[in-house]
Amino acid sequence: MLDRGLLRNEPDRVREASLNKGEPCPIDRWLSLDRKRRDLLGRTETLRRRRNELSLEVSSLKKNGESADIQIAESKKVGDSIGLIDKELSAIDRTMAEVELQFTNIPDQDVPIGKNESDNEIVKAAGAKPSFDFKPKPHWEILGNLFDQKASGDIAGANFILLRGWAAWLQRKLINWMMDFHSEAGMEEIWTPFLANRESMTASGQIPKLEYDMYHIEKDDLFLIPTGEVPLTNIYRNTTVNEGVLPVKLVGYTPCFRREAGSYGKDTRGLNRVHQFEKVEMVRFEHPDRSEEALEEMVSHVEKMLGLLELPYRISILSTGDLSFAAAKCYDFEVWSAGQEKWLEVSSISNFRDFQSRRGNIRYKPAGGGKPLFVHTLNGSGLALPRIIAALIENGQTEDGKFTLPSVISTKPVIYS
RNA sequence: GGAGAGGUGGCCGAGUAUGGCUUAAGGCGUACGCCUGCUAAGCGUAUGAGAUUCACGUCUCCGAGGGUUCAAAUCCCUCCCUCUCCGCCA
Image (cartoon, rainbow, N blue to C red; front, side, top):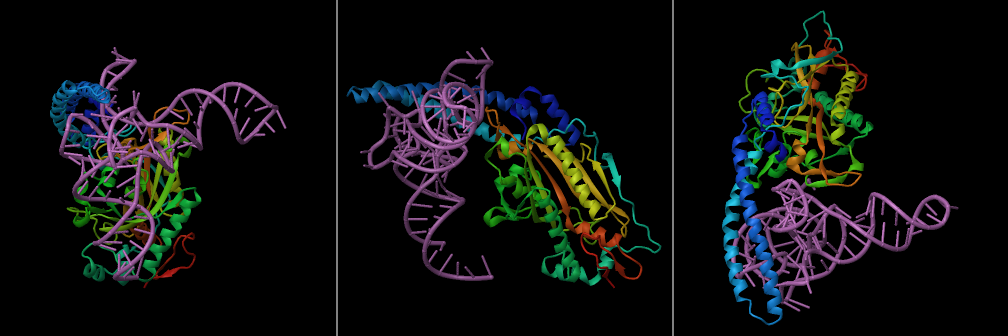
């Protein structure tokens, strides 16, 4: 959600941002609703004031045993007028709230302007791609029966994961290692619900735009979370914290559920794109002055992880056309996957500034006193599991049917055939 | 799922029977000042949020939404959440 002052005073900035992000921009509609609303508000408030005055008069007249019929009659008339205006006003309020949810966040100044992901800019690459004197296999060949698609298909359907044996172990091991890594860096470990209600989804920005891509439980109007960002961010929904507690740094493991409707076809082989994947997610609530450096901090934190996992990676800054609805700036991390010979996205780290905190009403009380202000929210994956597993086993394979894992995970070579 | 008790400002907590000087008491916390050799304590002052207005100000908000009334934190209806007990169940 954007600041009403911004919508009112700088509509051109809002138009430009929407254009660059390729999102609709109902600013003209909003401006006319806003004018109408303020006009009605002025009228109803004058009437309410009058009614309050009359109410006091009635009260004191009655106490003295005098007649208040004249005041009561006027008050009734005033009340009727208020009722009429309020009806119109509440219709406008509802419409405005709906319209306001449609404005995309404004990209930061240093975000490259572009149409889509081909305009993203690579800002860093690190680690050498492994070389092989044989043709490295993709992970689904290496995993063989341990990646049991027959079973997962029977249980749930296409594009669900069922891992067996050491493949299942590896996933559990990685989750633990990641959680420990973040905890040791000072984040609070959180275990959350994996379902969330409509309000939560709206606050973190999944609704209305991505509603169709989520699994929805109609009976209870609950959604399966598409990312741990949802529950972690909503911990502080409708909350005002003291400035002193900032930054709040949280980390949690959750499964992520995505319908991926319409994305069948390319890149869906193996662990690349599935309906349920495991992810460790970091969420951070920051003072507005410090969110930019916090974003860079989170980036270098994730770089450390990938270094320890010995995975070659590159970082790109997303162009406006690829930037998500709620984000102001975002870095993507990709790791090299030797068997598939391509880069796989494993982390996305974003600064949302006050976009989510406005929707979720997440504020802080300034230390020096004064009105509560909106915090800035940031989040990032640390990391998404299936693709990390794919890259680890593809990059570490040897011709004789073994492979090695990075030493932080295991020092024993794994035999896979 | 059944029965009961609750939801009031950042937090705690009066007020609801009998609707009207509640324009929400009081406390904690916080900020500033005074005092004390330091600290603690004490004293004083200030301190909820949102909307709107150039401003003074005005209006709204007592879990959410409706309703009754000249007037609702207070009465009525629906829903949500928390707690206790029972039922069911990992």
